Amino acid sequence: MDIAQQLALLKRGATDIKPEDGLLEKLKKAEKTGKPLRIKLGLDPTAPDIHLGSAVVLRKLRQFQDLGHEVTVVIGDFTAMIGDPSGRSETRKQLSRADVDANARTYADQYCRILDASRTSVRFNSEWLGSLNFHEVIMLAGRTTVAQIMERDDFARRFRENQTIGLHELMYPLCQAYDSVVLESDVEMGGSDQMFNIMTGRALQGQYGQDTQIGLFMPLLVGLDGVQKMSKSLGNYIGITEPANTMFGKVMSIPDRLLRDYFILTTDVPDSEVEALVTGAEQGTANPRDVKRRLAREIVTIYHDAMAAEAADEEFRRVYSEKQRPQEIPTKPLPAEALEQGAIWVCRLLVALGVASGTGEARRLVQQGGVQIEDRKVTDAAEEIAVADLLGAVVRVGSRRFVKVDGG
RNA sequence: GCCGGGUUACCCGAGUGGCCAAAGGGGGCUGACUGUAAAUCAGCUGCGGAACGCUUCAGUGGUUCGAAUCCAUUACCCGGCACCA
Image (cartoon, rainbow, N blue to C red; front, side, top):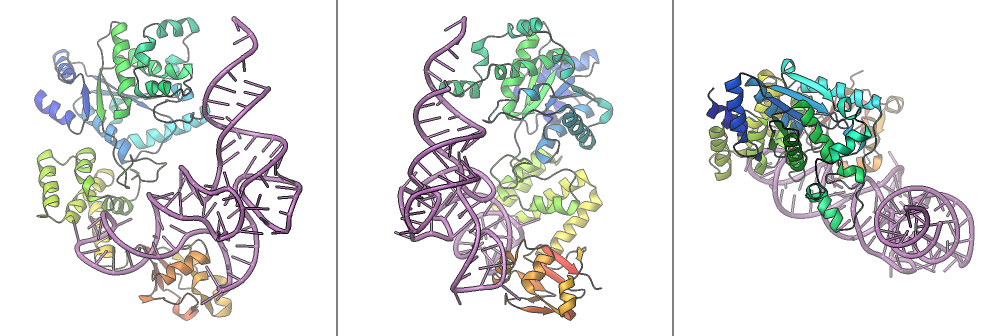
């Protein structure tokens, strides 16, 4: 692959590269010297679950690796004690050593599904930040100015609005920047919210007389709700370890307007093809549902395999397009009370099967016509169901929840 | 330490003595429709076998026939000021 092609590949999906022509320079340098580039990614040790959103950056790193470069993942265990002030108002809680280690292990299990482990090293930034003495810290702080640090949007805003800014928070960008100095990184990746921190790294490297890193920024992937960024805590995420069927279904539930972003950021489908697919969906020459199915298959193939994707697609069509039962239905035993009395109140049954949290909710489901027992819609919320009608029967709640009653 | 503001359901947030199980929005759930678990529209969304009852508005204790609402107090959060320099 020549350099122009490499550049095009690496630029795909990126929101920003700073400086713009820096990446080209770096690639040229690597080719000339034969030395791989060092790509750095800082990770927060608090949230170990990798989802499609966090995978956007990881997949970009993988592209670098496939081109022969080296990745260093920095676990910000030291900086976590400060808490990156970006955006959030509440101070982050401190993590114990054990928590950090446990989270890091979880990361390791997950990131190797995307990264090439042989070209990845993992470092904790407490390794070098933890041993700086106060004199060194002050000297480090002297490399920058208050005016520079206060350029950061959220600091500027908080200052303007008379909100508290801890002095230690001002040190955060400096810590992350120092990581880059220690690692002598060539490229630092991050979400678009990392702009300031990464550029501070670039400036600090210059202060230390190093070749300065460039920042490569990827957009934040919008979650299933179509509004907020994908995150575990908002529940609008697709985890990369989720079962194929779940993953497929979740992809099918994204709003149509996110199709282009998802194709570009989460799959390897070539740009030209993405464009054709998406415009087809937008102009009605292609069924958006089918375009989305294609997307879902691509994604499932990446994290499972082509066969699993095919099967998930089949299953989806079966259950949602043809309104049939899924292949596998979880089985639950018939509640004891039903056996004793020969019949059971529908609402109590739904609670016992775990599809309703209380009889109030169950009553609502029945009244709204969402409950079927063996293809018969239950309409009377007071109905008693005979045991004979229940053994081995499939209970359907809504369009996607199925439970089979144990046949005994 | 002082002064002020705050704490309401999954989340945000209205409510300042009865008409409050508590507006509105978000989220979730169900239905209709279809091109799909998209979009749109409609309903539901404290608990209970349910035109009745029960438990809720940070905790506790009061006032009152009656408290999310008034008083006292405790805890926590947010401001400001002071102390110290």
